Length: 156
Image 1: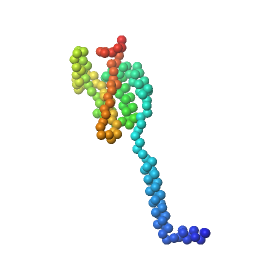
Image 2: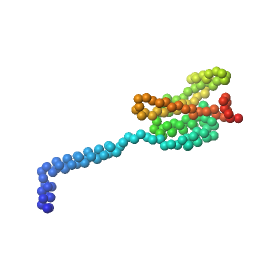
Image 3: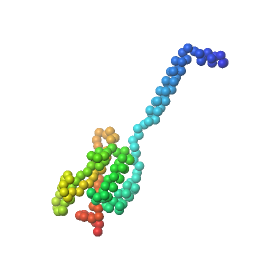
Image 4: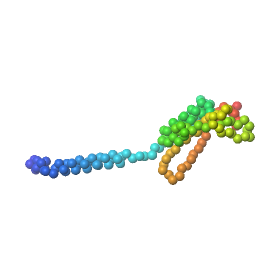
């Protein structure tokens, strides 16, 4: 039996068979590696209670537009957008600033402006999920609020 084994080892085309076997194994390993690297969509962890708790916290002082509370809320939302895999679509990462002159007459319209006197600057937070669909659905919501008072506020 050992004699036959030695004959097999010294066969002239054994090197070619060995090379072919190594190539097949290498191809198989690459194929398995490629197939195991699926690009699964990122699923956002449901943290709605934590999100609402942060955004409703008194330390944000009502999130009035242009205040530090609104800036903290925008930063929090930006981080959450990044964590769930949204692409930033604002002019500055997820943020897009806007300025407006608050109305003093309750019957007038709000004037949107760029860096004029007596203006307030706030931020929109914009993220995008590309799921390669034919159409895009836009979901919008206000995260800023009335702060500690002012027109329309129930705070006394």
